[in-house]
Length: 193
Image (cartoon, rainbow, N blue to C red; front, side):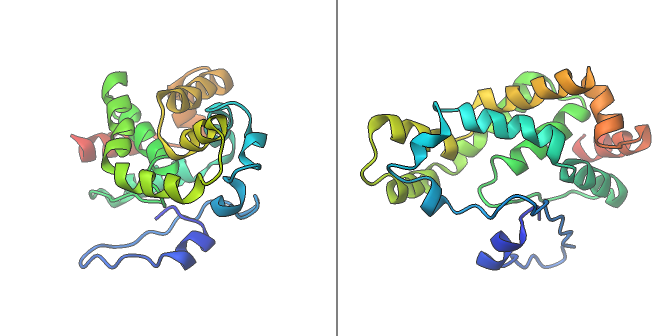
């Protein structure tokens, strides 16, 4: 469970019989986010062009999201299949799963396909949230809204590009950014094999 305290309070942890819950809370240094106040007509335009803010968020994950390393080290130590979840399953969960897949040798196409699957799996929820939030929006504002609600290839590319920019290689990011040992990576490979 990689949700913050407000997300957990809003939606209690599902009880999965026989499953061990590992709660890895992200930093709460940033303010609480409230889509019903931020992603509305007349306000959402402040976030720039469609995809701009989300690409920046994904680049920020590399610098400000140690949770990815914590989760992967926990999974490697547990040596058991894991169910990873946040709220919408596309940003935090998407980055974590993409990192896991790349660390264990999956090719770029398979990683992107897995990441984008959330758009199909959650199409009804996305449409419902968009209908709830887009009242009175211009076409441009609606395009920005959809860029927040959908997983897009540009976001995951921004994440991996930032890794290369800051660390020089994905292998260095695993070792120095996420603090994964070779043994931990081998343990993760065994889980996804």
